Image (cartoon, rainbow, N blue to C red; front, side, top):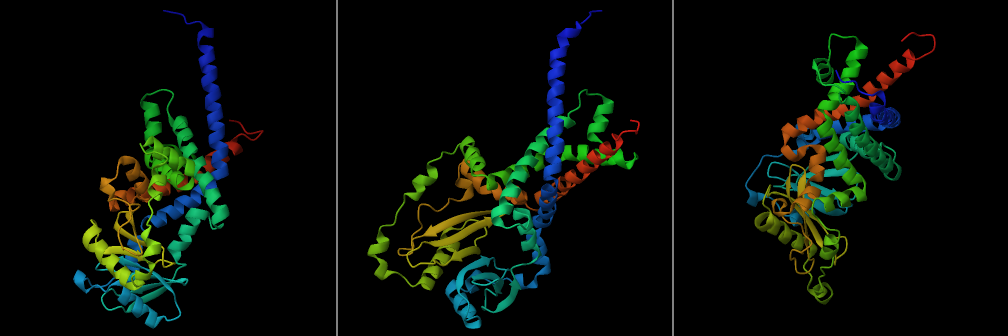
Length: 390
């Protein structure tokens, strides 16, 4: 038998122990510090995952009986119908949502106006401050307002991302055998509550790690410019690409301003051009935004599918599609595809209902981690009190 000198393995063990202690200490205290933020964002995220599906079932004013595409009224006629019914409201845009859905008209009001696309009749006026808007405010800003809340949720998401990695390190068994495998991958449902709680934190945290990392990282891309820029660069993009696109100018605006087409007529032309010549997916779902100033570009949105959309810009004088408009998503290189798909990846819409279900479960587990983690700490704190035997 070979005898191993004791001093030969002391430095590695000490180093490993030191790292483990620091990692465990950071996991504990950062987890306690960010627990409330993570819990609120997880619960509100669960609710928001199925926002559209729930609204479609509970809001009858959102749906109409589908008819032929040629029977859909253009923006000018919708504008006149809404202006007649609400003469004191300023109209900014039109959200066409498909042949079986009403048009949402963007007006200067706290209410949302929905209009039948075939006859211009208002089907509903609802308060913008509904349950989902309140949940969205909580998810983005913790109901603290944009300036303060966005910073709290951004840094809370960054801490949570670190906690997921540190938790994975803590979860990793020191030895791989039947006992450690069972402890790492299975919940011991017949044990006492304290052990079940520990397994819920440890095991369920492991099973949701991939989706939790994806949700938090896509959240970081939306929260921090440096994360977005770095990810874009790593994915193959380059920093000056956006600047090059912004150099595109339309010199004809000033010289042809007298020949400018009426705004509503222009909106009709652009609406028809988008749905008949440009759109590839979900062609009858088009957003048209009216320019705030006569010389501003027209904005339109199309190819809206599973949380991904395509921004289009039209010269207000010539009504030509401008180069700064986005390509169809399938024609983008990976770096651009990733940036445009980030929102869809964050909310789980990228794969439709199956991925939304997975994201709902993952968000629920993420919300539970601060709760189960706090109970683990509280139990150990009570156990460690003087006079109580371990």
